[in-house]
Image 1 (cartoon, rainbow, N blue to C red):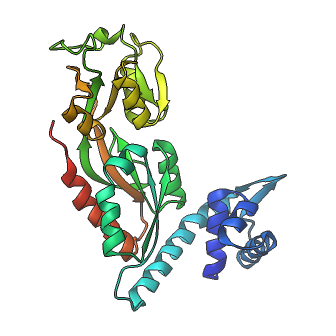
Image 2 (cartoon, one colour):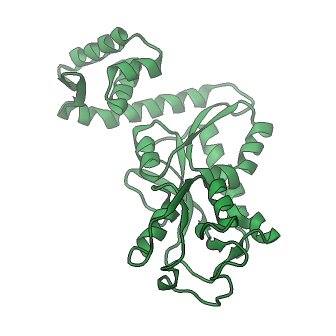
Image 3 (cartoon, rainbow, N blue to C red):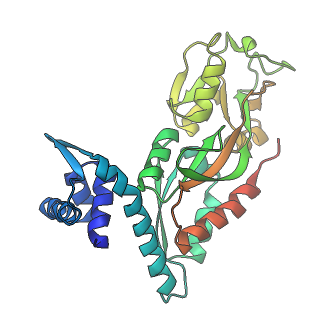
Length: 296
């Protein structure tokens, strides 16, 4: 079996589209179709069921896919082992989210920009399930997660740090002078939040489901902070994202403690052999991101 054919098969299996696979691989669609037929002919089995304009893996295709991925990983490892290069180099597709990109990752990105300019980082903004799925499919090399769970099916996970959360309001908010607050005490408050799918927004909404009115959605963290600062409501956000506003007094913390804990994590597909430049990224993420825990 040719590695080239297996690589094409893996891409088609990931995206379940000959057209999309061809575009991502830089081939004509006819070339992708021909390569899959050649692979099927050499194996004596059909790897995809053609269902009109859609395709899906056959049982044989499902069995072949993990082997194709392992062989691709071994080929990458072999190339890295014999490559003569003084500096780490290569692309890394990174799944991440706004709060981490803006407030956790700048030191890491700056480090690679200045120290390892041949490592080409591409940041892909996604959340939770979408990031995990992209990692399992091999679309992303690594992905940052902010979740209460630290084990994820099909993924290896490096826990970088707990992610403290804080409920914030504008100075002078009616709840700002309270020394303790329960979830029921927030029943009359107006809630401001980021988009659904954001882990701390979803967990907060779940915790307040018996009391809370609908969220006023601002989408981004910056817009949410501005809305809170102008008195439109209160918001639960990672402490690292509001450290500056808390220090300046633009926002104040409320005396409410979340019953859940989130952890910032770095994940990649289980069993994937990380090439040297990706291993370097993981090591430096561990060092730089985990050093940034803000004081409570």
